[in-house]
View 1 (tube, rainbow, N blue to C red):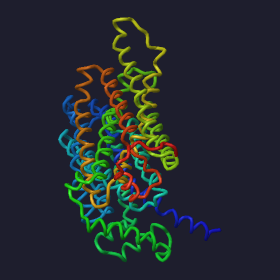
View 2 (cartoon, one colour):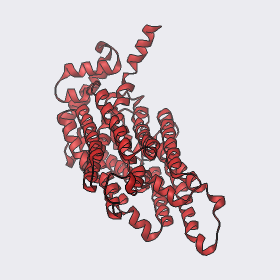
View 3 (cartoon, rainbow, N blue to C red):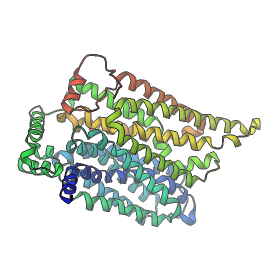
View 4 (spheres, rainbow, N blue to C red):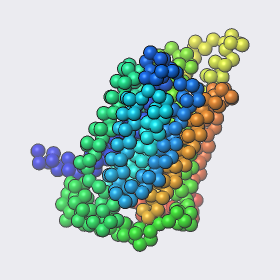
Length: 473
């Protein structure tokens, strides 16, 4: 029996490597949820490490500079991943996260917080660009979807940690607790192997054999077909080394870039980052009967559960159905939330009572975050790892990721200004219009990649037939 158990564990090493790689995404979730409890602490002198309360402009920068750091991260990630390996790039992100929390612990000025937030952003840019690449290169085609969607689970776990701990401990205690996450990641992931693809790219075939042997838990003699397939794929990519120009010349590459960029831009225009960054503040504004701290924990827990459902079922149901369900659910929730804020804005003049609708803000945000985590959260990043040819994947990943964080910066920086200018109700209705556009974009343009190998996906992208495919699992 114990021999059988050891054999099972060996066969699951790809899961272990994927889970430990995704600890960098837990760090990302911690960074993205950091402002939710911290903004409240910085607004109260007795709980703040700062001598004065930051201005509205400084709060806007504390929230949005993370996106600028994330914008700078992908180009650096692409270089480090190609030159030194995917493993070293991810460990580098862990070092950046740790450095940021050390800056937060020792801070006395807003400027130091901004430097820490920028470093967090760089770590996010690296981890989100490289983790899907690492996981796709170690996973079998049958498990690539479920392991790839671990990214959203890990991110929501990081946010849930911040939402659960942040409101109930001091500012300094919170930073020390969160510092433990990147430290744990660096210690644990340093024991994992580099991907066989990287080793073959650099002519280190013996190292590639040992890496594949470890990940699959089988002798290399039993893995010759897979090793040969990986070797041929990588060597063909080297012979046809990609350039940025090729990204726009080939039909499959242009189509993949259009789909992935469209999905990632629409992901950001859904308003997910303002909701995640300012969850506690949004609930304080609604005047809901649920305490803001508890509501944040509920949202975080729902995100984790929804993400786990995707992990368990994505390879059965497929990418397109989940994206359609996700965008439709987000649209309905945002319309309801905007309607509540509209009624709230009319309450004083009309004498309207909203007591019977007190549940609506919590319910709307629960549905919104659950729908996001079912589809647009994990699948947007999974598609980047799946759709691009190996020889131009690093260029494509950098471009799509940089586009993502450019849009994220715009949304985060102007969120408060737009809220004041057009009203909270119109702000959420605008996000609802964008998610309706996401539904149409998915239906018209996104191909299904469920169960396909990477070469089969490239062949599908090269087809001139209509993009819409059968949604049946």
